[in-house]
Image 1 (cartoon, rainbow, N blue to C red):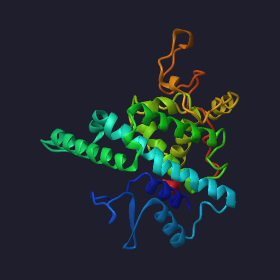
Image 2: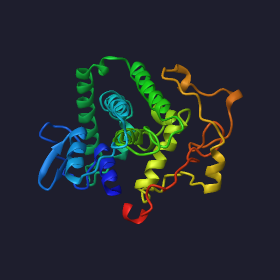
Image 3: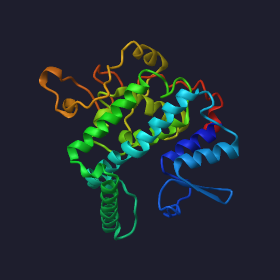
Length: 288
């Protein structure tokens, strides 16, 4: 079952083990091929895998919880997604270009061409969606509202819908992971690693649980002991609001300054000082 959970997360992260650059017949991602049958679209992929593999990650949810889960999923996929795409492919294009992996003597030129073609596609599709008709600041305000909504829904719970993982977590993690690890120095990264610290803990919790080998040399995450993790629980979470606050990204004044790293929260403690236990995955080795 943990391989299936990882596959759900994997699909929602728009990645595949073997990908040759082709899109689905609808011209979109993600899509999968299972036993020579192609399925596209996150929702249809999950339905297909649940039927084929006999696994339902939402079986512990009641009708009301399932309705909330689907509503939040659509907010993330149809709204929050576009604000992240804007940050990645329009506002942060130079940093995105540096992260692309292309070889050969003309790699820099190819990366530049690819990024600018993608930028044009994203801007065109955002305009058609409607969200691209707003100003840059308005787009980021919408992004912040979505992130605050997710932080409020999560609160101090282990997963969005409670102590057990559901398909909603696959969707949410797949999008928040971009803010955590692929948008350095941007507004969403500063927000998730700053005020909305519970979202950062949530992402790290899932990363450690399903991808324990996922670690990069430049990743300076502080892995705390069980004792320090228990001690960190005494620090309350912030009071999250659903509404945008324009001062979120303002520079801190001297009165609020203290020595901290990108991996510390407002208390000075490691932002990954959270409950990252493996109680649901006793057969940890097969999860790899």
